[in-house]
Length: 162
Image 1 (cartoon, rainbow, N blue to C red):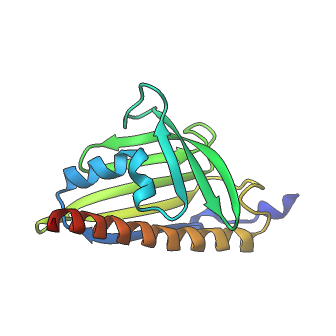
Image 2 (image 1 turned 180 degrees about the vertical axis):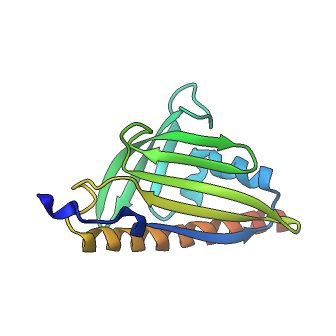
């Protein structure tokens, strides 16, 4: 099974960005409320913090995921929570997780440049067994991030126009 040892994880990352017509603090509130992600993400639903938890470093949440006809529940842990600036979590937890998702927010004009990044932290057979599998997963997740960012921006604009 040594086929994964030669994979450079620096290739298995991406960042996508979009301008959102809301202040960074407002965008932060939206993206750190993990129960709202299903509004924008094509792959996640039924996401919720554990009882009593909130968007703070160390908090855990669960979510239902879909991809290619498969469905599963994942556990994630918040690793960065700086209101108005950055929100990040690691699927599988800070200690032994496999993927980090992060939102970085920067004010621009009357709105916010929202960046969503994805980074593979380690290989795991659940993600794929070859570099081609992992590259395909990265590309799929990049498309998902673009869909999420567009939907978030459109949702904020729609709310504002009502």
